[in-house]
Length: 68
Image 1: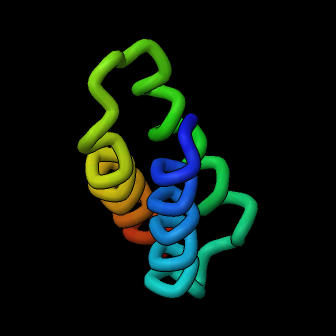
Image 2: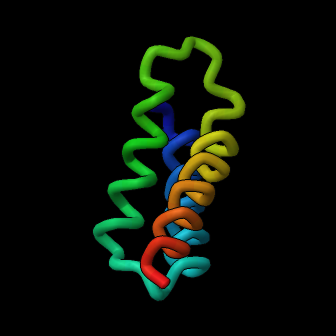
């Protein structure tokens, strides 16, 4: 991962932790990591942070809904 991508992923982590304060931070991190690793073999990385954020947010919304 290059530095720019790492900075974007760090920003995604911060936004999602802020968006889901009611969920366990370990769960949020795990979902983000799982979404990120789905793109491990991709050569074109330009949109990976955006795709990770969208996939993780959908998964976290599902987790939040199942907890209620």
